[in-house]
Image (cartoon, rainbow, N blue to C red):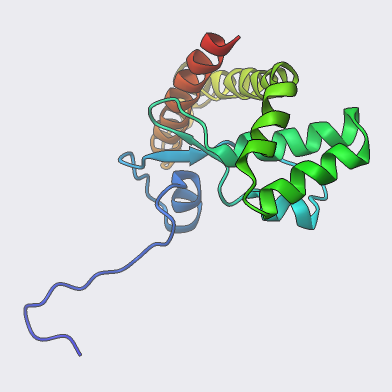
Length: 175
Protein backbone atom coordinates (compact mmCIF):
# COMPACT_ATOMS: atom_id res chain seq x y z
CA UNK A 1 0.00 0.00 0.00
CA UNK A 2 1.09 3.52 -0.75
CA UNK A 3 -0.10 6.30 1.52
CA UNK A 4 -1.54 9.48 0.04
CA UNK A 5 1.22 11.88 -0.94
CA UNK A 6 3.89 9.18 -1.06
CA UNK A 7 5.94 9.12 -4.26
CA UNK A 8 5.59 6.17 -6.58
CA UNK A 9 8.80 4.68 -7.94
CA UNK A 10 8.94 2.74 -11.16
CA UNK A 11 12.05 0.84 -12.19
CA UNK A 12 12.77 0.67 -15.89
CA UNK A 13 15.36 -2.03 -15.31
CA UNK A 14 19.02 -1.79 -16.24
CA UNK A 15 19.98 1.89 -16.45
CA UNK A 16 23.27 1.04 -18.16
CA UNK A 17 21.53 0.43 -21.45
CA UNK A 18 20.21 3.74 -22.78
CA UNK A 19 19.55 2.15 -26.18
CA UNK A 20 17.15 -0.35 -24.59
CA UNK A 21 15.38 2.38 -22.63
CA UNK A 22 14.94 4.36 -25.83
CA UNK A 23 13.62 1.41 -27.81
CA UNK A 24 11.38 0.06 -25.08
CA UNK A 25 10.11 3.19 -23.29
CA UNK A 26 10.83 6.03 -25.71
CA UNK A 27 13.22 8.16 -23.67
CA UNK A 28 16.96 8.68 -23.43
CA UNK A 29 18.72 8.62 -20.08
CA UNK A 30 21.80 10.74 -20.76
CA UNK A 31 22.92 10.33 -17.14
CA UNK A 32 23.63 6.65 -17.78
CA UNK A 33 27.11 5.65 -16.66
CA UNK A 34 27.62 3.26 -19.55
CA UNK A 35 26.31 1.80 -22.75
CA UNK A 36 26.57 -1.69 -24.15
CA UNK A 37 29.63 -2.10 -26.35
CA UNK A 38 27.33 -3.38 -29.11
CA UNK A 39 29.58 -6.32 -30.00
CA UNK A 40 27.45 -9.01 -31.63
CA UNK A 41 28.37 -12.68 -31.75
CA UNK A 42 26.38 -14.98 -33.96
CA UNK A 43 25.36 -18.11 -32.07
CA UNK A 44 27.06 -17.34 -28.75
CA UNK A 45 27.91 -20.37 -26.67
CA UNK A 46 26.89 -21.13 -23.11
CA UNK A 47 30.45 -20.30 -22.08
CA UNK A 48 30.21 -16.82 -23.62
CA UNK A 49 27.08 -16.13 -21.59
CA UNK A 50 28.98 -17.21 -18.46
CA UNK A 51 31.77 -14.81 -19.39
CA UNK A 52 29.26 -11.95 -19.47
CA UNK A 53 28.00 -11.83 -23.04
CA UNK A 54 26.07 -9.62 -23.72
CA UNK A 55 24.63 -8.51 -20.37
CA UNK A 56 27.85 -7.13 -18.85
CA UNK A 57 29.74 -5.94 -21.92
CA UNK A 58 29.90 -2.20 -21.20
CA UNK A 59 31.74 0.85 -22.34
CA UNK A 60 31.68 3.43 -19.55
CA UNK A 61 31.25 7.17 -19.95
CA UNK A 62 34.85 7.75 -18.82
CA UNK A 63 36.16 5.61 -21.71
CA UNK A 64 36.86 2.53 -19.64
CA UNK A 65 35.88 -0.96 -20.74
CA UNK A 66 34.32 -3.68 -18.63
CA UNK A 67 36.39 -6.78 -17.93
CA UNK A 68 33.65 -8.86 -19.53
CA UNK A 69 34.35 -7.23 -22.90
CA UNK A 70 37.99 -8.28 -22.70
CA UNK A 71 37.07 -11.78 -21.47
CA UNK A 72 34.53 -12.47 -24.22
CA UNK A 73 36.80 -11.14 -26.96
CA UNK A 74 39.74 -13.19 -25.71
CA UNK A 75 37.63 -16.32 -25.43
CA UNK A 76 36.41 -15.84 -28.99
CA UNK A 77 39.95 -15.12 -30.18
CA UNK A 78 41.32 -18.26 -28.53
CA UNK A 79 38.71 -20.30 -30.38
CA UNK A 80 39.94 -19.02 -33.72
CA UNK A 81 43.69 -18.79 -33.22
CA UNK A 82 44.68 -21.24 -30.55
CA UNK A 83 44.26 -24.73 -29.35
CA UNK A 84 41.03 -25.74 -27.69
CA UNK A 85 43.06 -26.47 -24.56
CA UNK A 86 43.98 -22.80 -24.11
CA UNK A 87 40.40 -21.68 -24.65
CA UNK A 88 39.17 -24.23 -22.12
CA UNK A 89 41.94 -23.30 -19.63
CA UNK A 90 40.97 -19.63 -19.88
CA UNK A 91 37.29 -20.46 -19.39
CA UNK A 92 38.00 -22.70 -16.40
CA UNK A 93 40.16 -19.97 -14.86
CA UNK A 94 37.21 -17.61 -15.19
CA UNK A 95 34.76 -20.07 -13.66
CA UNK A 96 37.15 -20.85 -10.78
CA UNK A 97 38.02 -17.23 -10.06
CA UNK A 98 41.67 -17.83 -11.00
CA UNK A 99 42.60 -14.24 -11.87
CA UNK A 100 46.31 -15.03 -12.25
CA UNK A 101 45.67 -17.52 -15.06
CA UNK A 102 43.18 -15.20 -16.71
CA UNK A 103 45.71 -12.36 -16.54
CA UNK A 104 48.37 -14.60 -18.10
CA UNK A 105 46.16 -15.22 -21.13
CA UNK A 106 45.13 -11.57 -21.36
CA UNK A 107 48.79 -10.51 -21.37
CA UNK A 108 49.79 -13.19 -23.87
CA UNK A 109 47.07 -12.24 -26.36
CA UNK A 110 46.66 -8.54 -25.57
CA UNK A 111 47.80 -7.18 -28.96
CA UNK A 112 45.37 -9.44 -30.82
CA UNK A 113 42.46 -8.71 -28.46
CA UNK A 114 43.19 -4.99 -28.63
CA UNK A 115 43.16 -5.12 -32.44
CA UNK A 116 39.76 -6.86 -32.46
CA UNK A 117 38.30 -4.28 -30.09
CA UNK A 118 39.80 -1.35 -32.01
CA UNK A 119 38.35 -2.68 -35.25
CA UNK A 120 34.92 -2.98 -33.62
CA UNK A 121 35.03 0.55 -32.19
CA UNK A 122 36.30 2.03 -35.47
CA UNK A 123 33.50 0.29 -37.37
CA UNK A 124 30.82 1.58 -35.03
CA UNK A 125 32.28 5.08 -35.03
CA UNK A 126 31.91 5.10 -38.82
CA UNK A 127 28.34 3.80 -38.53
CA UNK A 128 27.49 6.46 -35.95
CA UNK A 129 28.98 9.13 -38.20
CA UNK A 130 26.67 7.96 -40.98
CA UNK A 131 23.78 8.38 -38.52
CA UNK A 132 24.90 11.81 -37.32
CA UNK A 133 22.94 15.04 -37.29
CA UNK A 134 24.37 16.35 -40.55
CA UNK A 135 23.71 13.19 -42.52
CA UNK A 136 20.14 12.79 -41.26
CA UNK A 137 19.26 16.47 -41.58
CA UNK A 138 20.14 16.35 -45.27
CA UNK A 139 17.89 13.35 -45.78
CA UNK A 140 14.91 14.35 -43.64
CA UNK A 141 14.99 18.16 -43.42
CA UNK A 142 11.79 18.45 -45.46
CA UNK A 143 10.05 15.58 -43.66
CA UNK A 144 10.61 16.42 -39.98
CA UNK A 145 6.88 16.37 -39.31
CA UNK A 146 6.80 12.76 -40.57
CA UNK A 147 9.75 11.84 -38.31
CA UNK A 148 9.00 13.45 -34.92
CA UNK A 149 11.33 11.05 -33.04
CA UNK A 150 14.32 11.96 -35.17
CA UNK A 151 15.75 14.56 -32.73
CA UNK A 152 15.61 12.00 -29.91
CA UNK A 153 17.28 9.34 -32.08
CA UNK A 154 20.01 11.79 -33.03
CA UNK A 155 20.59 12.66 -29.35
CA UNK A 156 20.88 8.94 -28.61
CA UNK A 157 23.40 8.43 -31.40
CA UNK A 158 25.42 11.44 -30.19
CA UNK A 159 25.36 10.08 -26.63
CA UNK A 160 26.62 6.67 -27.75
CA UNK A 161 29.18 8.25 -30.09
CA UNK A 162 30.53 10.36 -27.21
CA UNK A 163 31.18 7.25 -25.13
CA UNK A 164 32.69 5.41 -28.10
CA UNK A 165 35.03 8.37 -28.77
CA UNK A 166 36.34 8.14 -25.20
CA UNK A 167 36.77 4.38 -25.55
CA UNK A 168 38.59 4.91 -28.85
CA UNK A 169 40.98 7.37 -27.17
CA UNK A 170 41.53 4.90 -24.36
CA UNK A 171 42.31 2.09 -26.81
CA UNK A 172 44.65 4.30 -28.82
CA UNK A 173 46.59 4.96 -25.61
CA UNK A 174 47.00 1.22 -25.10
CA UNK A 175 48.45 0.55 -28.55
